[in-house]
View 1 (tube, helix red, strand yellow):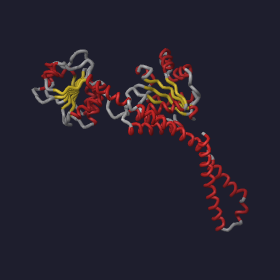
View 2 (cartoon, one colour; view 1 turned 180 degrees about the horizontal axis):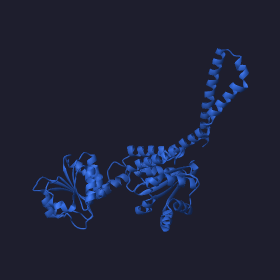
View 3 (cartoon, one colour; view 1 turned 30 degrees about the horizontal axis):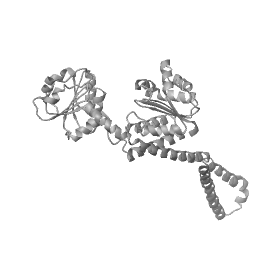
Length: 409
């Protein structure tokens, strides 16, 4: 199986993420399309992994080691995709086979091949991808074994190295800074903007116990949707100047090309409160007029300040890569041994049935007449002797075959 194991990878390293997005498959088409691909290309096993910045196709089958073969795959799998896009995807795909394919999957799950080194989410994505493919009978014994070892090495990497210790995402860093400032759980959050970043940060805050959210957004339906998730209130962005209930934390991230929160608006939002506020402005360009920071009593968290911390943390994470690569090398060697042992088990799995058939033939045909002459005690003793020998004939050859095979590898 290892000889025919391959991975075709479309990742952020070579392709724009928007182009990779063309390869994602909706749940409604997942089973039928992937099973059709598996059958058409005579693959015995197929694992499909899809994230925001990579699509990986791992399979056991005939070699797909040329760009033309990968173009044939894309043409069959994505017939509605523009031909020039398929060509670019095929040309910029990465191809791995045999041990290198296993090594690649280990590296992916351990995050050293990720857009953000040390982000643990990938291990869950790999596990979920396997479970989904297995539920549709796409995978088999070999990919099960590979994924089991992949998850094991990834867990070991995250446990025994510092590759994921220091946060690098804007959301994680903003939350860490809030913890340092001891922002209480009953703080009032004023969320200006309901885009991806604010939505992610707000969900993160709710998960950690914060509960008082008021959301403003240009498109009211988006504000309403986020507020419902946060169990908060929603308003249109045009109503922000009329908001009179004060705040403890202001989170701003909109797509405007000017300072949305002016000194005048900020003063209105304060409602004459004089305690120190926390302002998280993670928009580019900034939503907050810079003079507000100078003129008011605030803790200010900006995307630029978070980026500096992120860059430093990323450098520290990257220094762990050498350790991770050593661990992956060891894991790959372990997997090779595990795979050989599994091959022996599969090759020998007919032995028990064969031994049982020999026993049945001996007892019911070859020595049937002789057995009928025995008394009950003799028959019982004979059954015990044959049962004992049957077990040994199953276990001893299996053990010897493993030892001989592994010694000769």
